[in-house]
Length: 234
Ligand code: DC
Picture: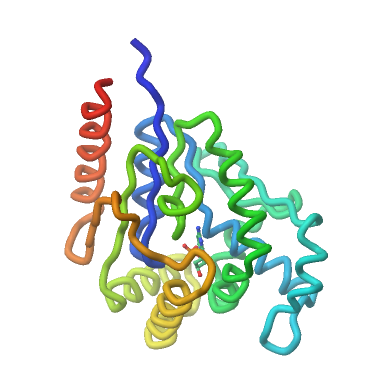
């Protein structure tokens, strides 16, 4: 019997390994993986490249006008089968991970018209189900009725260290203190913004992975998936 496909919502703080575990799980299950943070990052990159800023602040009117021109899509890497973010047809996967984009993304992700446009696209992507989506508001706003919701967290220091290792591992220059400040700043903005603040959905399972290995997380998540299917009687 064909297994029923479900929606898996993975929310949590930045740099806590959400994407790695969500990506792995999607590959294991043959589900589609969507990194919604990448979508907000791509909008930010567009604003940076088109000078849609007034000093340090996004030029909201100009960005709102430009929204219909911003097309975000994902293309599967033929080798790794992991989706790579495309902005108006250009591969921006590596560019959007750099620190200048990270430092500017939170204010952009707090704009209601940006969120509306992204959430609409995300809900469209989940229509066929069989999707693992990671972000901040997936279990609360995008798919409040997702069958499996996980809220992931880890201490700010552990997360800054992981981000630092990731950047230096790619040969990019990185400063641990600067990254830690960036992680803390984003936590604050993400959980205090007026629209869709980061919070755990009441029915989400909490995963603090500060002291967990990737293998342990993976096993934990797969078990939650199986449990969900069992409860649904599949
Ligand atoms: O997960 P990330 O670090 O790539 O996310 C980038 C930014 O986008 C971060 O400031 C939080 C924000 N974001 C959001 O507001 N809603 C989402 N669903 C995903 C990310």
